[in-house]
Image (cartoon, rainbow, N blue to C red; front, side, top):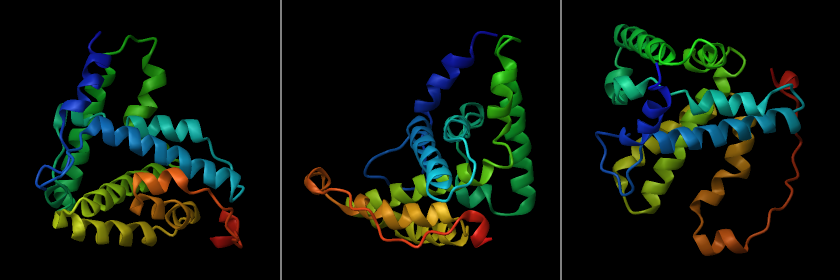
Length: 208
């Protein structure tokens, strides 16, 4: 019953991009942190730029645990995970079983707080976490390309196409305002100041 947090700490031992040659290896713990940062950012943008109700803290917490089940299942390579609907359904079942097993490792008093995190984001936050997950992958691809690794070029293109295809104003805003900085050197990042964009921002309801 007391193994939950010790297992969560082992997320750093699970490698991502297993079939890809990486200049900088990435593990699930690092990825989960970045997804949480991005989900929080998207939620803040939704709330403060587009004026739609959203809880950035809830989005960040959901993102932190979105891959927790992989502690028990490992990270299945994308070409296999999404090969067909049968495999996807089977893998979702495996993920659900892994999440249930993790939940059983907590004292009964703590389970209500963690059950929604391990079961997956609520319907309102799920698109944000999914978009943050894809954004994290896209950023990883940019970093690898800039390091001279062309292994991620196709993944970069597909990730950007997926992000644009979501039709989410907060994602488009992030792509326009913040993604260009990932192309800059450390010296450039330290000397440039943010300039408020001149945008004709619409509310989420107005864009639907």
